[in-house]
Image (cartoon, rainbow, N blue to C red; front, top):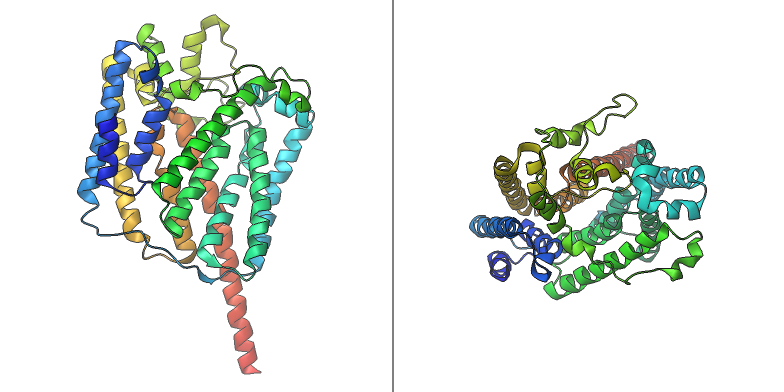
Length: 426
């Protein structure tokens, strides 16, 4: 593993390349491989992951030197219209009102907080409402990106309003119960700053990453204790360790499960198709196919399955539950290799294009790469449907927010030209 990481950094100094994300996720979410004894097949799969990661590093080393592109410090472009803040805050009213409605229908803030760890079952049927709440994240990311891309008339006021928006976005994500929704936001902001202002130094990235992991471990403990707290102000009565370190075995546990107990209820590709069928309302299709995390949790719990919590699969386990052990593992590595190849190709195109883009075009390109760069690494431990659904939904919402901004800029330019023409005629 150390050799693979050394090769990764030797091949490319950019700390936010696809290979860096791949190795970071492999190191963190499979750390239990080095901490406790695992099934022998788990070690074999992990070794396959390492060789795949080394292939990504070599691919980056082969393609990037030909480009000769280096990240440079960017200066803000033209001044952003003052009405831009109004547009962003007007769009933010939608997720804020949706969050308030969720608090209302669940019985108040304390009840909502106590239901976070059981949200899979408790919030079933609230998909459209949760979708509107998720709009807060792309709005905040676009808000931050524009602050780096455009010159501002009153920068201190701009960033004060942005910090206020960030606080609301983090609070909303905390009420949704997903640690990734909070922590991924700051990781994306670090990436955006890296490509729009100046490259982030490795030591700062390591400190930031370690801080995010500690915060994630603490939030995991808080979430696990919320179900037994009847009042939100009694959170000081938490039980268990201060840091929940189960994330270190997220990638290992599913592998141990399917290798220690034989899985035979093969899905024949249906869990991959649920990335699309999950958007069909259950009242329209009551018996729609179950995604991989549901199939795996039912296999793990048997008759004790409640549907209130689910476990992620990882691409290898997802391949096994669909096509069996030999074929499923082979298909998983082929698919993983294809995704990594596409990720590196997109990364190369991104570095070539970033120097030629300006304004909203540059903003959208950086956001798009920031959302897609971690995908290959996330497949190692995440569930396919959940990963694809989250990425596609976030890209869609970012596109919608960017489109609103582009329409506002077009309107602003047209009005300015008409005003200039009128003044000239007069």
